[in-house]
Image (cartoon, rainbow, N blue to C red; front, side, top):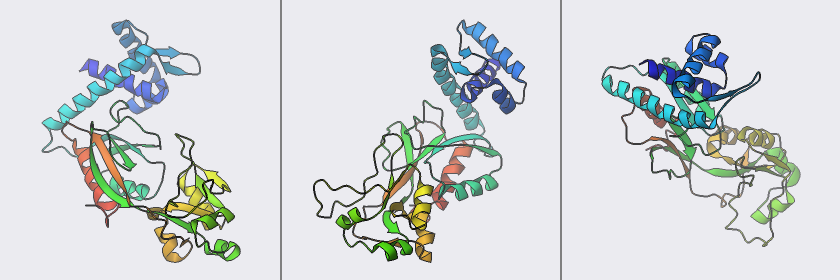
Length: 298
């Protein structure tokens, strides 16, 4: 198994871009990590990393070898999990990609960690489209459809997007009765980080001028900013119900234009198809499915 150990060292260095960080994760010194990488490069007859005093980056050969190494380690882990499936306690690192939002995920993730302390969560919050298999994720959580045929998907629940604002804002600026009246208001808009485009508001049922555009008094690329600015009366925002239910119930935010609502959008958790689920992933999927959206989960 020494070759497997060398692959694990290589993957840790490639992912952390640091001998020190990899050594900390593996419980050995940075010099020991450096010797293992040097021995692996000598064995393979290629240079895996470009080294300088300030950076450590993969060579083209190293990037290719990283993909293979991740697959090999995943297969070894799957084989070990299959052998001990009946009695193995969920444990080990679980690498998951999630949307770049806190609620509703953070409270449930904390509950999961409390329930399964031997599962080490490695969470990557991003709105980019990750390649679950090539990037070595155990699972990914995303909204919308699940188009990747290489992945198995389970629906976690659904949510609606609502157009809302603070009572103080509407008291000062008036309550828009139609989508076209939004042109006279301050709108807090979301820009997708991966495309640079604005999120579309569902005004397609309205009779609008061909050149109609929403004002852009505030533009940002995260959810928490839009919620906070809306609560402060700085404008009207288009927000998911799961993130603002408490504010709506307390009257801190008010929904407007209720006819401008699209069909519910689903959340899915997806993982690589065609292999036995390790216990840590199986319990993670079941835990999230039962707690994230209990009123909408199947």
